[in-house]
Image (cartoon, rainbow, N blue to C red; front, side, top):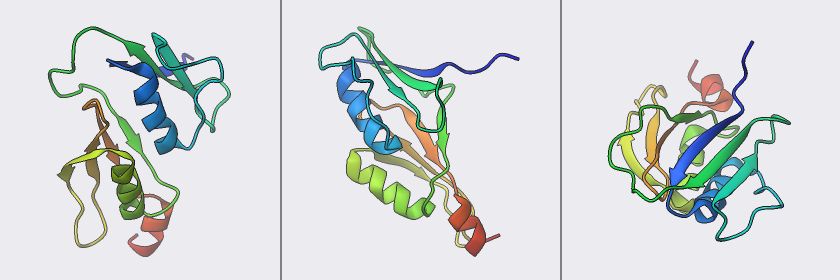
Length: 127
């Protein structure tokens, strides 16, 4: 069975965007990567082989992502949304509902959309 090796981001500044995602994922940037590199990686803490991969491209993002990452926080969804916005993300769409269901669409500093879903803590208080 195939496995996903990485989730790749085209971007203008791979290291700068990797710094943002490193903070979001609480995972270090690969030790052999440095500012100015054309490619930068982050090994995900839940896997020895899967990674986020950032590669320099000349063109800026122009349209909505066709694929995106959905994050399931280990804290509450709202706390993680606040933490990630504090790191530099932009809130794009808020689909949270009064009954505790829903999700939030954010954009990273280069405009790539991603979602924050409910986590286990949220599901315990709103099954």
